[in-house]
Image (tube, rainbow, N blue to C red):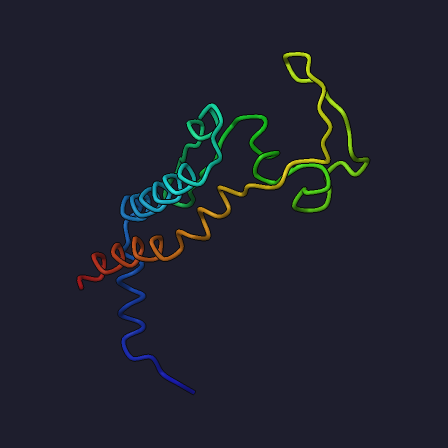
Length: 138
């Protein structure tokens, strides 16, 4: 059995992390992911990219968009849908706003949020490491 020297002291110091310190770290981490998500977001008009926001408190952070079509871009549609739950009766036909007809089997997923989070892990870790170092006085 291994013994970690100083664990009790470290836990005591970590327990002293204030809610504002934790909230600040979560906020910084959210901003890292939000910026990367905006960089990775596909853009036609820029509306989807501009709608990406983040919010946080001392327990959790959220990054996302409230646009109705964001899940279709992120997860894909039709035969390309990430979970295989897209429309399978392909191809299908639809008319655009200008009255032009199109045929499609779906849209490839473009997981800008998930990719941004995955690619930000190292930066997020550094943010929390810094907060912990400051809290324990190192």
